Image (cartoon, rainbow, N blue to C red; front, top):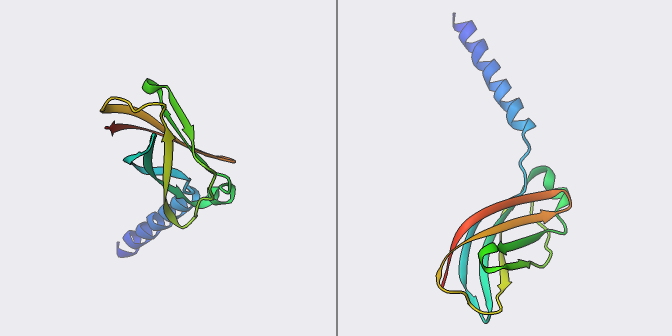
Length: 126
């Protein structure tokens, strides 16, 4: 009986290891925060996780910020994603005039050759 339980445990361990190895980690957007205003630009801090197979395709990455309610669309400068964990990026989004204080739904997109991730976040702008 002990051999059977031990054999089943080994099988489960091997299968879980094989499944975990087959699911490669993908580049993604992590936490997003609104930092402050710099002149007419809203400054967002965006954590980018460049991991696994996507690290080879991430030399020319951009973060795109879209606020539909305010008709604002802006794109960051290009950057290379690191493959060893999160990397914080400051993204400056230009406004022709500051919006009224309030909650706005913002779409953050991470794009590069072969890499795409999108996150919608409610952000308080004041």
